Image 1: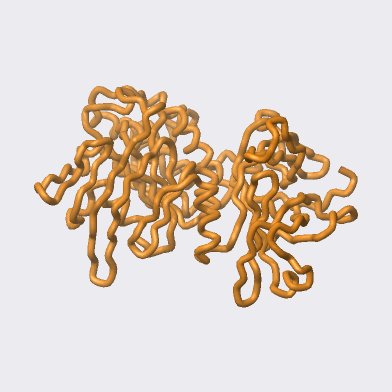
Image 2 (image 1 turned 120 degrees about the vertical axis):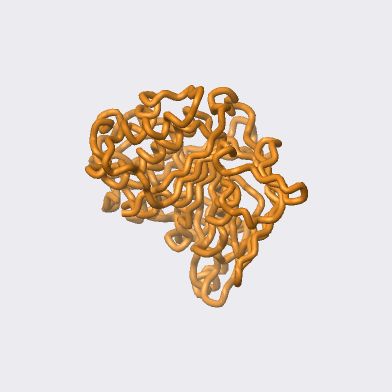
Length: 414
């Protein structure tokens, strides 16, 4: 570690409409059986239509990605029962929520589905606890208590405060807590943290992930930010021009977008935290080895990747945890020789598996121990280095190019 580069450490609130009947989330745990959402509907507007036929198996958090106006929010409104004009069928875990053929339409309040919008509708004259108690009294036979939900959303110390005194992130936690008290079978979130700064947003995402893991509550999370979805979701569907793609594991789905030209090419991967190096402002991560058929069973890799330090306190509880990271293809360079004397701290051997040319640059797909990396370089560099598939090269990128939504500093205002 003698040659480390410099590293720079990196109000609109959600309205939640809770939808539930007498059966509670706790009565049918989803720890082993994923929820199945079947969609086959069309919804036409004056100049736009949504037509989706898809079945999604949701065991944790499924991300929904797409540009503005692609149909993401409309999709959630149909699932929640807020679009009576939608024509077709919709079911959750085999229970029909809508069937136009026999005029079946379960009202929103009976669907056991929670919907989180971007704006909050908390009662301004009530405290946090009073807002939750008002929503909880409408749910009979509850298994979740207000105290339990306050703990889940980290609101215990704020429960007696008036909601007008809360920060944007705190108000959002109250709204989410109110939704949880309805004990939905499915929670829909429509860009609930879009108005927050990145530090607060990353903390909210971490809290939401913890809630999902503790309650085993399936969630659909809409965002136009791939890095946000990569941090929170385990799988992803793409909505474009009113159509929806098949769901795919999060890293695979992001890599598939690279070839569609819809987003800046990037490498999406999960890395294990090995150690913090506060003297250098870095965290060392390990690159997992993906076993292939031609590798021996005892094959292992000692490749490390360095990122900006993930917590200023270098909290040891993070050691051993696996987190998702993104590296933009434009930040990865290629060398035909091993970079022995470089200030760039990250360099890995790789094999070129594909080269896709455009008018001005080339997107190079590389493999390191079974992990895909993507580098975007100029056509001139591709020709000058005579790059070809199956060639052995080295990739290199700065620590600052390794991005994670994991927060870097704790805050009392999330």
